[in-house]
View 1 (tube, rainbow, N blue to C red):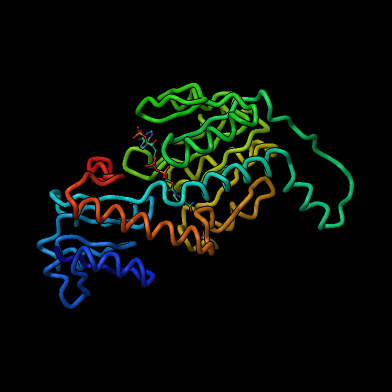
View 2 (cartoon, protein in one colour):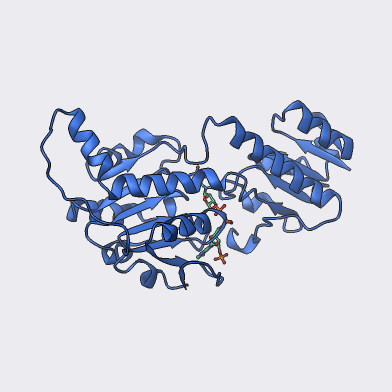
Length: 301
Ligand code: NDP
């Protein structure tokens, strides 16, 4: 079995992979039946006519050139490998914003030592978690443990310490904290609209650690303009990594912004685990087992 690897693996992981398969580089990618990568181009795909399995190292799969991936190629993502990191970050963002920690920190640093806004309570309040996957279920459990009444939204029913709903408006209506951990696919693009944000508590916090495009940009602009007490806290931006293009929103006082770091940016342990789990999953396929996180092609094409 020949596998094209376009990611830098630590030596021990590379050796483990090499014991099970023949790793090939660009010069022999035409022989590869499987590939391990962060991203892949249509040109690379064209150069691999024998490809049957694609293991991606990231949880999100929205960056793949789906139209160029032949339908018989099985694509697996890496959800779960950094979900602890993202979930912790989401809850930190939610509480830091909701409890006005960030607000008062900004004021104190500006030399404004007076108090203005009150501090809302989280315990007993409604929270919504959008996407009950690896990240969302962790976030939902953490919020429930803090004493919030959690509504969990996804397509497939999942049991846990939340009220399950597949009705987005029901999940978000009256919520004081909403966290989106939805993947970006053709069904979730633009899913969160003005009516959903407006249905939340006026002093609520909407946190996005999934992908920006799940939320309509215009809806965010409007709600932030209309409700100065509402907070939009996000790690992900419509401009992807060209954050300056979203400066008009990022610079608003009721926005809490981070530059796509929730996945454990700069953390060697998280990084290692992502690579390790991707290799494990690839080897599941090589060994004839069912890999985890197989993408539903119809979500993307
Ligand atoms: P999972 O695949 O484990 O979970 C995705 C969840 O979304 C599932 O519960 C799925 O359930 C739900 N979902 C998918 N499509 C829809 C839909 N159309 N309507 C409602 N629910 C839907 O992924 P993770 O939780 O691990 O990650 C989620 C996303 O977070 C990633 O795709 C990635 O974009 C982002 N991410 C961001 C990071 C960052 O650094 N900020 C780092 C890591 C991930 P069902 O199919 O039943 O609906």
